Length: 228
Image (cartoon, rainbow, N blue to C red; front, side, top):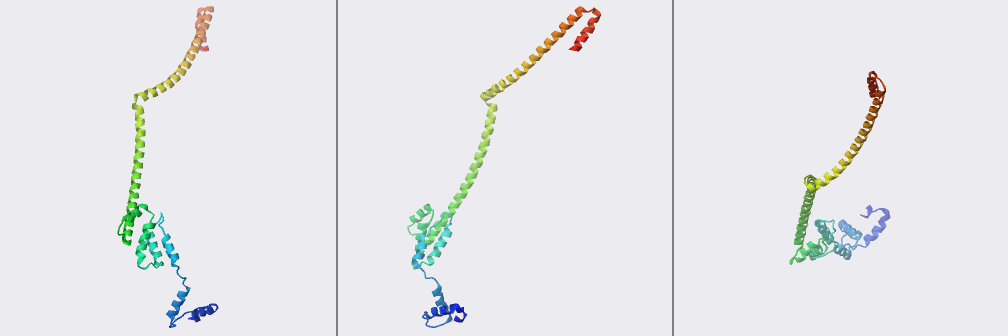
């Protein structure tokens, strides 16, 4: 076997081999002896510390948590107490306080029963969250529909409420009166201007006809009208 060891490690390998107290130097016995030598020694205190410090995280499912506890327990050498200690760690380390209280109320709580209770509670919580999501979606739809209906009612109220109609009519009436006032004022100014011009033309015609013979009056009237 040592013939397969690299030359630089052969001396060290032989020294280690010489420390083994092997009754029979069979190949399997030698391999097992080297495995035991190279494998780091287990520190039970450290392994149990890891187990006892393991608590469920908020983003971790119960199945993930209990699976990791069982893996950690294998290196703790709990013996026949392993299931009971895993059960106790579930009670102490589970994240949900309501489930923890439920487990503490159980008189004869076994590991299997604790696992069943936690799984059932976690499953029911999933259904509750799904239901709450559906309810929230329905409520949002109702709120949106109610808002639209309220807007329509307000529009209808403006057309059916006499008081609101009177207020709107008064506002529109004031604007209309103001516009009409401007139009009428402009029209009156134009009419007065035309009236003054007509009087001026008429006076001009009269003054000319009074000074000319009768046969020329028609021409003067025609000329005056053309000047206008």
